Image (tube, rainbow, N blue to C red; front, side, top):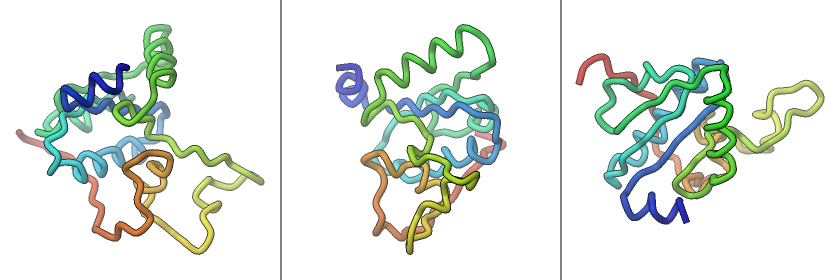
Length: 137
């Protein structure tokens, strides 16, 4: 229901829990990929500063290690869908190896690998993926 409402409003909520700055920056690749669809993004990230001046981002929230952020993350995970996206690979780490090693005969861009579980993942999409930081509006 919430995902349909967000779709009607043309909003996508993108969230990432974790402290790896590079993984947070990879979210900008999805934002760039969907710019033609005129989607408004709401970002939940530990490094929301990466998205401050991005003209495609409607608003960015900072996640912290506190009760409120944990509650927000639980709610976002519960309502996860086409318009509420957890930018986290669903592949499990095995044998102490990074999840990226579980791809066989196919080595996607890391940003694409994080989106494997969403409708935005296309194994045959070979367009160049780029991550962006905007210093000015």
